[in-house]
Length: 118
Figure 1: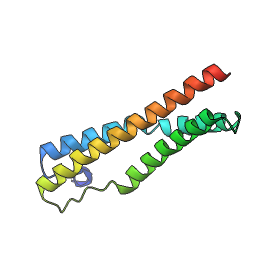
Figure 2 (figure 1 turned 45 degrees about the horizontal axis):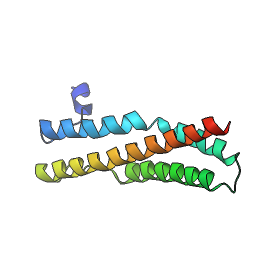
Figure 3 (figure 1 turned 90 degrees about the vertical axis):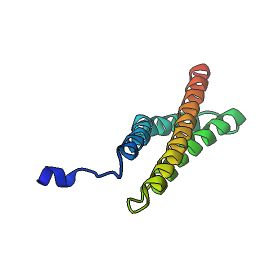
Figure 4 (figure 1 turned 135 degrees about the vertical axis):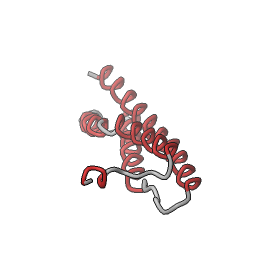
């Protein structure tokens, strides 16, 4: 009884599946937050007036902010209708996918620059 009371309840199997898809994307990219911070520190050791360095740092910061904002704003309203919950999760899946792309792109660009610069 105690085990089942801790299980998350979803309004439908489709909502559960979509929620899990959203969280999979989040969980896959979330560990890269530390990579973003490491790259940002390395870039700050480069020429502070270099416009490329400044853009790479800004892109990393924007990606970091994107993840932090998404996490802060993500909240599934369990009292909403099934249709509204599903719409919300589909919208959030698009948003977290964009955050993931932004993070991966900024990491890739910064890493490439640092390989060339060093």
